[in-house]
Image 1 (cartoon, rainbow, N blue to C red):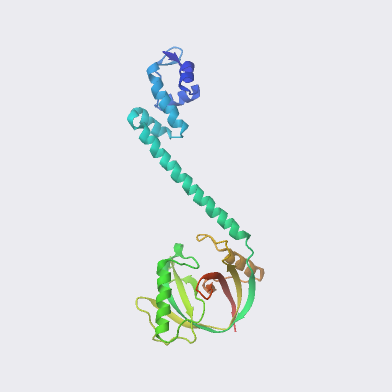
Image 2: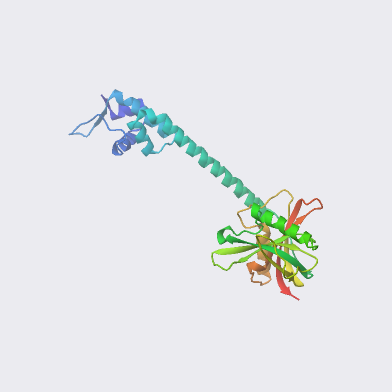
Length: 276
């Protein structure tokens, strides 16, 4: 029999750890002197002690170490399961770090905000209802892209094709927990009152002549993070606050700018201040 100090030395454990494993029912001493309380361990327990140390060195939780001691043939399986969790957690941490770097890089970009007067603009839009938690400016999922394309095609069929860059806006829906994403194309004239698009809710109208604050974000290598507030929105909100303007989300438009080949080059966030 080995006293606790000898056993700890041979197993590569500390006396404190052996006390803990005894308390947790993972590795109890072979004998405990009823008078002195001294613990003694059998040489046959070294195998379990070494397995415990190996698993704890890999940071396997105590509950799973106990399972391995109870069923030693599962020790490697439990170690591999733990390793898979560690790798998955590390990958998630790496993704979070990459996202954080992207957010910080975006906030370092100087986003110009200008005041401009815009002419009246007829438009046609498709309405998509979203859960409020999913409502993000510039939503570009498949449903939105398909709706934009369908609306473009329908407008072209009526002889009133889009004349410029599309825009989106988000506003409150009829139900408090819902929001409406409005996908709009500018056109030369307001569509007829009976204008419709199969399978979609549409709206038509004319943006009046108006003053706007416009923040422009160039696609120049630094991309904004999709699930964070866009740096252009931050710049726009700061300028609005400086001017004493209380923003209403429904008046904010995100405009997609493209080159002649249709490649995205920039986005504009435009907020209407006053209508003329």
